[in-house]
Structure formats: C-alpha cells, structure tokens
Image (tube, rainbow, N blue to C red):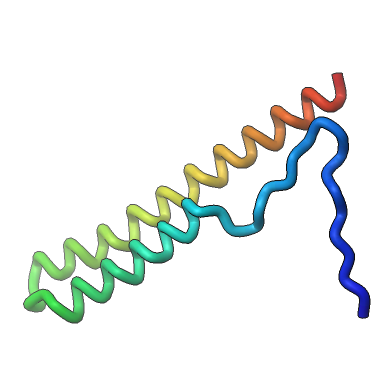
Length: 81
C-alpha cells in the first residue's frame, strides 16, 4: 500500500487536519472534566464546570471550522481569478 500526499494547487495552501485550536479544545474538555469530577465536590459547581468544559470546546471547534472554511474558500476564489 502506497500512501501519497497531494500538494495544494497554485494559490492555495495546505491546512492541517488537526489545528492548534482543536488541540486546545480537546485539552480544555479533558482538563475541565478532570477538574469537575476529580477535584471538586459534587454539586452544582461541578456540574457547571463539567457543562462549560463541553460547551466551550465545542464552540471553539465550530468557530475554527468556520474560519478554515472561509480561508479555503478565499484562497480558492483567488486561484480561479
């Protein structure tokens, strides 16, 4: 099995499959859950931290994908002109 990588066309740039924002979002989710369920007393505050540690990284991932899509669309438009 041969694995090949394709180079981006002229005027386009290669984007990584995993971005630093996605890594930060994953670390925040894991860290938030560890804090909420490992170090905090169970209760309302632990639930609030747990839910926040899920919602915030999800928002980061969505915003990152919107930005990446905009960049890809913009570079594709420049390449076709």
